[in-house]
Image (cartoon, rainbow, N blue to C red; front, side, top):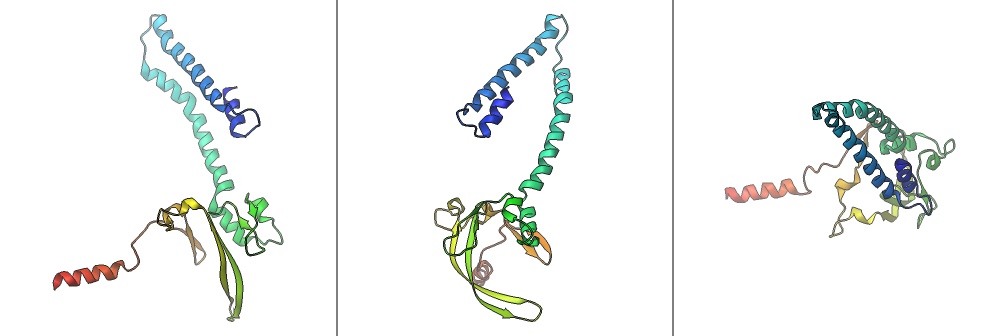
Length: 201
């Protein structure tokens, strides 16, 4: 019942917002049972062994916890993985798949173009194609950015993008690569060279 109260709270069931009560009930019941198990050997005249107590808890809890952890990791990768969503969205044809429905994404209207924005994406860029150039092996499209939508918490106090918060990735020659670690700043090498030259003088 305690766990059910927490689940109902997180599910957002109307008029049942007291999920914290389930946590309180859980701790009360757990405290009662643990105290009972600790006192039992003392009441029976036997020595109390905390090592045996924790070993029993580990044998009871860890196997189930391990199974749950592995299941959540697997389901999380299948359902929530941005890499999976990005890859399938790029490979699937919109004529054969409802990408928003099948990938668990939410469409919302754009401000300047007909194509929908992705609610879950922290940055949405609205573009209009202005030119199409045939280059033989492929076509080159030149587009104009007409609007940009972004989450406010991605900007710092000076209005600059917090790149580390993006959890960005790059597609290079058929492979996806993680980004996010700052290696330097634009013009940093030139400033360092100028400073070294000034020191020599």
